[in-house]
View 1 (cartoon, rainbow, N blue to C red):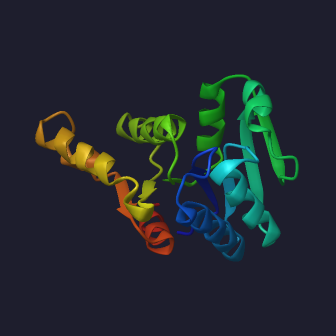
View 2 (cartoon, rainbow, N blue to C red):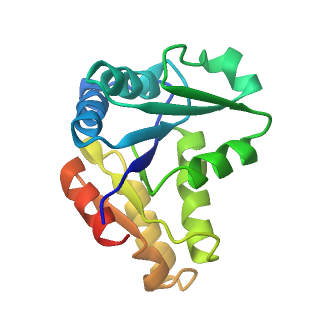
Length: 182
């Protein structure tokens, strides 16, 4: 089965290393080439903006989901295929999940981690069965991956649930793994 819409969680900042922005731009182009609709947080700044801009510039479709409050803080993207404005973060995550076949997290801050773990929790609780991936660009998530391994070792998470997070350093490889789980 092929992914038709992919939710990507990522930062509203670009980070200090150019590789983050370069990778976000390449992913946007790849989504357009594969005709996969981008579902994301709706911002025009940081990795979010780079991802959406590159997808749109390559002829792809991008749907943003943003709260009214974040419209002002993150400057909602004015040129998307679709921009959904909701009242709460829970509505935002719910709509993004409903519209997506799978999830990938790129580097970001606590909001990105919140979204990543929310989707994993929903899988664990059988709220949905959509696969989640972590693109470990430039070793960004190395310590998070080590923490998850420790959580399993310490008996707070089963290996089965930990294995629901697919990790790769290559976007196409990660996408293939997620499609195998659909």
